[in-house]
Image 1 (cartoon, rainbow, N blue to C red):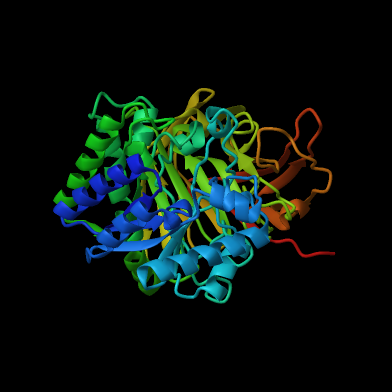
Image 2: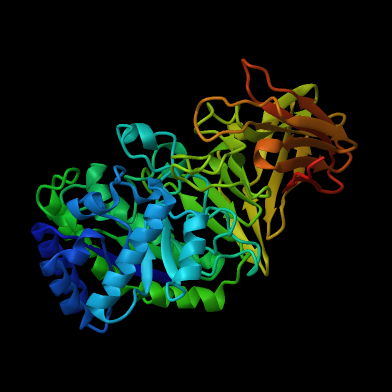
Amino acid sequence: MLYTNIIHRLDAKAESLASLRFQWQAALTRGLPATTLCSYASLWEENAVSLAREMSADNNQELGLHLHAFNCPRFHEKYHAADPGFWLLPRATQFAAIQEMVERFTAVFGHPPASIGGYIMDATLLRHLNETYPFIRTAITSCFEEGARMYQGNNRNWMLFSDGGPWAPHWPSRANALIPAKDAEEAVDIVALPHLNRDMMMALLSRDDLFASHPGNIVRARINQGKDCPYYFRFLDAWRRQAQHNGWSYLSFFISSPWLSAGHWISDHPEYTRDMYLDSLDWMRVHDDISVCTLSQFGEFFRQEVPPGTPHICHWRDELRQSKREFVWFITPHYRAAFDFGLGGTLVDFRPYAGRIDGDVGPETACQWNGSHPFVISAGLRGGYWNNGWSVEIEANGARAALHNDRVRCRVERDGDFWRVIADPQTVRLGDGTLTLRQTWILDQSPKIRVLREILSKGNINGPVHILDQFHGSIGTTEYPEDLRSIRLHTRPGAAEADLPPLRARLELCGEDSEASLTAPTLFKPRFTLALRTPLSTSKPVTVCLTTSPLTPN
């Protein structure tokens, strides 16, 4: 089942209210429930409050709060704050503003808000919400706006950095809101949702903000022809398919009313956005495997069915260009990983969560504006998989062949609590010989990524065959190198290890009968390499494991 939230926002301007009425009536006539989140400024605007009261009489409508529209005279006069981004305000200002919004909402509508939304909600803010307003049980906590060209594409004026977290609903850790909690004890008791769904290929290769569950963003990307955009509905269907792998899937359809209004500073064709908005609602009605619900209704489903610590997988195809390129994303409380099967299954993004590092943002924090969780691998930001990635070669007959030179297809199979990602067989030429092998990734709730390799056939291969694994790692959140002097590299029989104090994490690459080696970073090549050379025979498959664990202080 694909659980879908239709989300609107109550804003104060007259043109936005007219567009919101259009959205409400469109959902109402189709019998679809929706959630409207009230911005700060709207709560003191008489016409906005009147419309919200009218909407709340509809049993299919839910009202909540949205941490937006603080760039208004009332807020400036009361709090003397300059930053329009709520996530960048001083903590005391945040807490006071939320209290004011909750009290005003309750006074106006006669009940407290059922849910809340924001672009970034860090762990401290979520803990405060949970402790102070326990009736708020569901929250939109992050945007999942990622990609090497995200910041540049927004003219460097959209200071929202929260890369490295979940793309799907999750239980946030009390230590860092981008990290899924291991268990109920570690979890903040709020179901955390993404602002929108994104194209999971563009999140790695370019920028995902233009390619999202939002008709206005599709128009901004110029990938539509008038109201028509076949890609957009392929994208939506791709999220339906994810339920096959997880038992459920989620779609956030959050379009604020300014995107449908004339004069919006980005959307220059609101008529196209309106038409695609209506087509999206009709799409939701025709599929039996879609359940449209309010934010709090989805939150209650999630509470009952998805305990803290549950992993999540996403098998994504190239919906934009319809090539054969595929990606697999996987997230657990221990790490987030993305594999590119256009590169033979190379690991192209890896974020170890074992150290539970701080990710709070704002003027009093160490992170300030940068709430992204650091990567150890980001091929998009660090010059490609050959600089930053886990790649594999085969060695035999005095020759080598790189598996990442071949595009392969893959399939995902679930077996109880773990998933197998099975790549199509690859045939490589080694001197005068050929060898066909298959790779299978085994993913589960543990901190291990296991990769099983097996030879299916070989011809004219004389002598031993070896698999060469090379894990090229670094630390950072941007394309620029950072200080790696604190890392420590070790080998032991069958394993290569890296201690990463900035992440409070240790990585281990180990294999069966493997020879381990290391390469330390230099200023010209600011990366470390963990390498294994593992014998491979036709008699049995071999497994190599990548494990992340907390780094124990000396």
